[in-house]
Length: 259
Image (cartoon, rainbow, N blue to C red):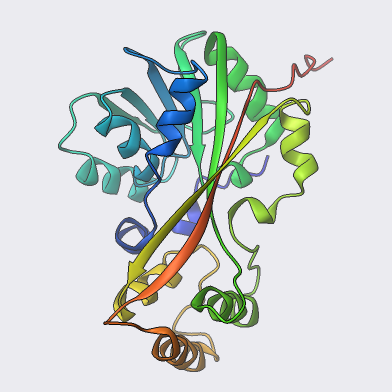
C-alpha cells in the first residue's frame, strides 16, 4: 500500500493552496462531450488535497465529495471551498473511501494517483462507481522547454531534492496507467500555465513533498539557485510556468478478488 496518509504534505498546505496551478475548464468540456458527467452528476475527488480540482467541478455546478487523509489538507480545503454548499470533505483514502456502493458518477484524482496503491484503489473505485461510471486521472505536468524557466526549475529540483520524482504523471511508468485501465483509456492533452512572482516560486517549491528543509546543508544554495533562475526569466515581475494538463479517462481494470 503506497498511501502514506499524505504525511509528506504536512506543514506545506498553505504553500500548496497558494502556489499550485489550477485546472483548465477544458476538462469539463471533454467529460461532458464524452457523456461521463451531466446535470446532477456526483463527483468523488480522491486525494483531493486543498480542493484545487474540486473547485473546477464545484464552480460548474456539480456536487463533490472530497476524500483526503491528511488533516491539514482537509482543513485548508474547508477554508478554500467555503463558498460552495455542494461539497463534503471526508477523512479517508483511495483504497478505503468509506463511500456507499455504486454511489458516484465519476471518480477523479488530480495530481494524486501516484500516491495510490493502483490495485486496491481500482477495486475501491469499481465498488463506488455507478454502472457505466469512469475514472479520470489528471495531472498538471510541467513542460520541459529548452531555455525556459521550467528547464531551470527542473534542474534545481533534480539537483537539490532527494527523492524528487519528476513532475506528476512523468513519475509513473505509462504501463502503470495502462494496467490500471486495462489498456483501454483515453488521453486528452490541454495547455495550461501560471504566472508567479519570486515569493510564489518559493512557495511553489516548498509546497512539494520532496522540498528540503532549513536544516539541510544545501538550503541556502537552493534559495540562491531559485533566485538566480527567477532573475534570468522574470518579465514584468513574474515568471511563467508552462504545463501540459493530462487527462487519462477510462474504467478500472476488473481486478480479481483476492483468493
